Image (cartoon, rainbow, N blue to C red; front, side, top):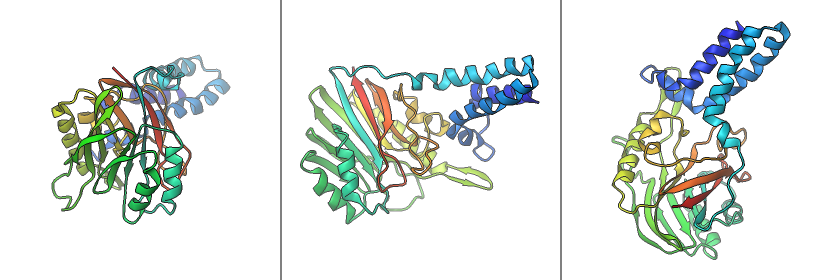
Length: 301
């Protein structure tokens, strides 16, 4: 029994792409919580030791090896900061945040070069603009997403990632070019549609369609260096985000589970890059949002 469960767990970790998405989105649902399968091996270790089962202990090497291959590197220390690095912060601030001023101060306290925010709603937007203006004089807002920068922004405008049928006025994508000391960088801010877990399975059609539009926009981007910041409503293992993750580098160090803030189970707030490496990602202390902010160091090529 223990050995069998260990083999199944190892198989799910190693071959999660083989789990079909056609039946209730089970593949994406598994991938959303994939790191937590490592706990199964921990739980199974006790019975294996009590039974003194060599077969069970050997079988446990399968999930342990698979988990280490997939996620072990994220736990290693990050590299020392380099000369061509940017620090960025990504945060879904929540449209129900009762303390936008405090949230703005907390994010600025991490001293990032760029701050990307989602779920910006009036009158809270005015509070963020006022609180961040002294240190981040350059900013752009499209709909409910915004970007604040220490460096000048050009070409700021709407990034259309709206899936068909979602309704008029849905503006949750932004593109701008940041004139950093290391050269021009295209900065994308995106808030993909939410997914829902229902009795029939995972409902992610709009999220997946929006991810496809975002991936195509990234592929067509002329500026070589690119940073994507956003609430993508999916983990980097989730195949629904493959149009994006196949084109960009994801974090090399750090787990940074960001949602829900009260008991973080997954990182759906993402920082990715092209012509650059996301050297490290981490969460910041909780704000008035149901998401935790994430901060990342990006080493530009």
